[in-house]
Image (cartoon, rainbow, N blue to C red):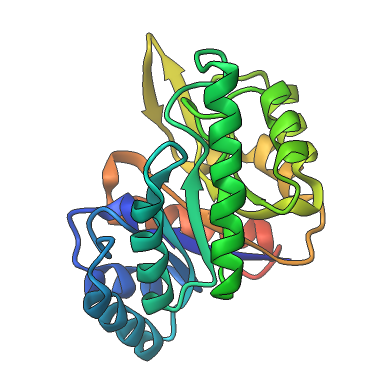
Length: 252
C-alpha cells in the first residue's frame, strides 16, 4: 500500500503552517519534516510544536529528514535523533557517508558502516527506524555499493528515489535490490540536461512510475519532492496525478 505525502524541503520558503495547509489542499496524508529549515536539529521545543500542529492539521508525520551523514560525529546523530523523538517521527532519514562509493577508501567505508550500524541500534532503542537515503555522493550511489551495504548493515532500512541519470533498468533494479528493506520513497520526475537538472511535471514520468507502483508494498509512503519551479500550484497538479496512480479512478 502506498500512501501519498510531501517532503517539506520541497518548499523551504514556506512556514510549517503553510506546508501543512498545502498538504491538506493537495490531499497528501503525511509529511517528512526536513532538518535544515522547518525542524532544525537540536531545537526540541520547536519539534514538539511542529508535532502538535501536524496532529491538529490531521497530517501524519512520516519521518524526520535529517542531514546527518555517516562520518559526522555521533553527537551530531544524537542531536538529530533527539529532535526526531521530540517530533514524534517514526523514521529518521540519514545519508550513508560523505563521499561517493568510488571515492572513499576501504577504511572510510568500514568506519561509515560501523557508524550506521551503531546509529541504527541507538535509534532502535528509542523506537525510531533509521533509513539511509538512495543518494548521489554516498555509499548508495551505485548498484554494487547498495547491494554491498545491505549486507554490511543488515538491520538498516532504506529510502529509494529514482536516479534519472541512470538507465531505466538500473533505476528499477535499485528498487528491486531493496526488497523488504524499503522504508519510503521520494517521488519526482526529472531530466538531466547539460550537467543540470530540469524538473518536469510528474506526469511526464508516468510510464516509469506506473512500473514502480505496479509492485505491491505492505506499507510505503510515496513522498513528493521538488516540484516544477518550486510552485505550490505544480504540487497540486502533480498530487492529483499521484493520487490517480495510487487509487485509479479516485480522481475522475
